[in-house]
Amino acid sequence: MKVKVISRSTDEFTRERSQDLQRVFRNFDPNLRTQEKAVEYVRAINAAKLDRMFAKPFIGAMDGHLDAVSCMAKNPNHLKGIFSGSMDGDIRLWDIANRRTVCQFPGHQGAVRGLTSSSDGRILISCGTDCTVRLWNIPIPTLNSYETSNNSSEPLAVYVWKNAFWAVDHQWDGNLFATAGAQLNIWDHNRSQPVSSFEWGTDSVISVRFNPGEPNVLATSASDRSITLYDLRMSSPVRKIIMQTKTNSICWNPREPMNFTAANEDCNCYSYDSRRLDEAKCVHRDHVSAVMDIDFSPSGREFVTGSYDRTIRIFPYNGGHSREIYHTKRMQRVFCVRFSCDASYVISGSDDTNLRLWKAKASEQLGVLLPREKRKHEYQEAVKNRYKHLPEVKRIVRHRHLPKPIFKAAALRHTIVDAERKKAERRKAHSAPGSISTVPLRRRRIIKEVE
Image (cartoon, rainbow, N blue to C red; front, side, top):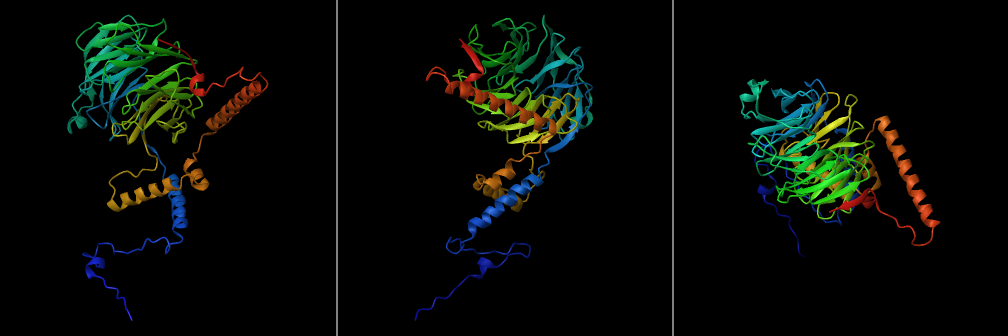
């Protein structure tokens, strides 16, 4: 007779210290664990419910402006610094960690419409409706300066021009910056006149963004409903598309620099490949009013939008619907939004003179996490992803509470879209075969492309 003896070394199951966890040995043979999938499914539901229970994205508001916040810019050299400009001409540097003003930049006599910082993080550039471009020296972010430098700053230079400005952006690598107004002007730090000017059409340019991968390429949107691509190495614009409604803001994907997303007046955002502008790569729908601003996460995997409907939404870069919606009772129309430089937070500026700080992941636990807590969060996320296609888990993960006006506006919008779709289907069914072709939404909003 053969006898099998279980032999174990005491080192394998004995704790080294009394604070250590007791080691547990499990046999993961599926024949012995017949309820494994059922147990994991219950854990996925519980993880989804806990995720919704702990979803408290709002961190705090930063007040100090006396008028609506019209624009914002990040400080590339300092993680917790952000600039904001308001409609009364006030520019402020904020310390996000302490939620207070560090420095003010007085000087503009009208609304500040654009803010940007140089690639080395030393110079802040502002422009506004008072027809001036102002260059400011950014305070050096040291431990002591942010505690004691609550003072005002004088501009390094003031450039006066003929027309009001609507936006400004700096090259990701270089000394040039662009302003949008009656025309597109390219400026150098050391010259009081534009280096070059571009004009295509008679309407005002309302937004401008430089390409993060190619410093000489930039995209603009104008009030004639056009989106235009420019190359500074050429003396004329490259390409232009005209849409049915106006584009309020543009942002390039920092990880895929050939792609950009446009925030449009028709409540949607459109992602384009700059090499092929006759069709949008993706249409991002969920807002119920005009989308005012857009900004990509540094990871390039998602972007945040602020809308006239008083909400902020976070979209995946390739998804048609938002994964998150943020709103408060006090927050009014959102004019500008930005991701923080580490993609952990979202900052919004609205019509009620406040900047608001939000978590990029609504249920994320702030502070230092223990290794056990990190492993627990990773396991819960993995279990949710494994069972996210099942109805109960999907329902809990997708559910968001909406304010009543937005809920009703969304229902009305769905009704209108369904009615238009049914009308098109009936018209096609009662027409001669081949006489009416169905145009997808990715092409339907584009009127024409001009080269």
